[in-house]
Length: 397
Image (cartoon, rainbow, N blue to C red; front, side):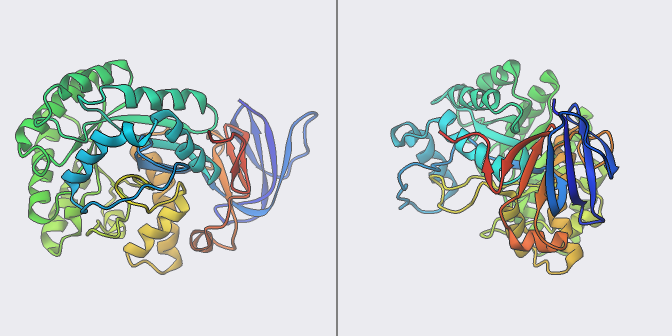
């Protein structure tokens, strides 16, 4: 852990002050004299916010830094899943190298924590997870990575997957994933029963991709709610995407949100431009924990995306039709404190005693910082400067 005196910054766009850091923790705000040998950085009046958090991404998928991937396939979920599974080795998507590029990009742009879903299937076994674990080890102290054991190709339709998920959790994956119990497996009872059995066996939370829209997605959510109650997993389940909450049925969505709030289900959104997404402001009003993520970036699924949670904040804000400064500040919350709340990160924030994990932003206000998406002047992790002006202190491979 590191010591640092950071001068002339504005925590959450408030009054300018210094931040004193000792042993990787914030110990004070105000005006301080430097201690002998203590590193000093000048924040030059920039805004200080807690580290940005990508709480929904896929580190094992990006083609960042590789030759351009020509995508000539239909945008059909099952087709994209199968193509990637069967062709990623031939394309040359090395999970360790590519996840390093993705994670270092996030760190350079103010990221301090990642939750990454990593594919597990009988074709690849645990090889992709092992690549991410190597990246996590090499980037320790730069950015924290939480790994979700993710059965992207399905559970019931891919024999052998359950055993692999069990082994992945035994070896150290912190979260169990799932995907479209109806749309992918066509057996919602079978998939969800297995997921909740595995989660309770290993004592891990669940984070389920739910692309299913409208009534189908609502039906699946209700099945998830039943199992949360039956297994006492309130506060330990997240639903990623949750497109059904964007359907044009205000009353039904309201009933779903009420139950989400009662069961303390977290929602993770990417602001997907091509789908009907949950209203982050409506979820806020209900007291639901909401985090954000950049999802897959520049992969075999599509060419879009940046390893930058401010860029994703802009997408989420625009998709939600947000314009006021208060609303834009909440978008920043979603890609920072919101993600920490979903992931259960301890000692997170800009308070005395919190871990010194934060980034500096340019702009007069939080809203302007979200809109401008300027390079981050400084990123600090555990009291150590990990990036300057959009460039991390470690080189991407």
